[in-house]
Length: 126
Image 1 (cartoon, helix red, strand yellow):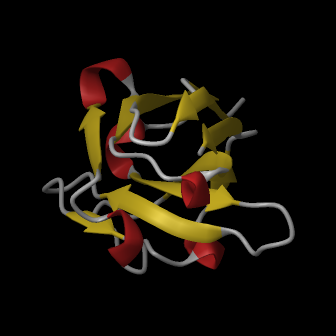
Image 2: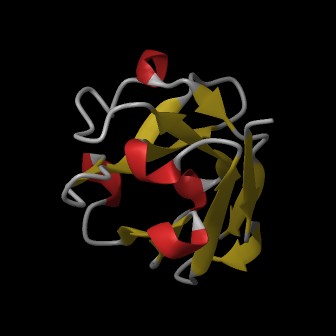
C-alpha cells in the first residue's frame, strides 16, 4: 500500500520556523520526484517546491524562494521542507506528493503527481 505521511505542521508566530517531513512507503522512493503543495481556505492547491531523485534538482515557488529549503534523504524515504521567516500568508494545509519521474519534469504541476498524502496544517499568526 502506497503511503505518504506528512508531519511537522503546527501553529507558529510570524517570523518563526517549521520543518515539515514527508515519509513514504509502498513504492521505490528513489524512482520518484517529491513535491510539496499547499492549499489555503477558498484557494486552489499550489506548488511550493519539488526535488528530483536523479540529481536533486530543486524548484521553488517565487514567493518562498530564500525562505524555504527542500531536501531528501533516500535512506529514510523522507523529504523535508524547512520553512523559515514564515508569514501569515503561508497559512495552509501542506501536502506532499510523489511523481514517478526521476528527473522531475513538470514537477510544479499538481496534475503531474501519482500519489498524495493527507496533509498537515500550518498556521502562522501575525
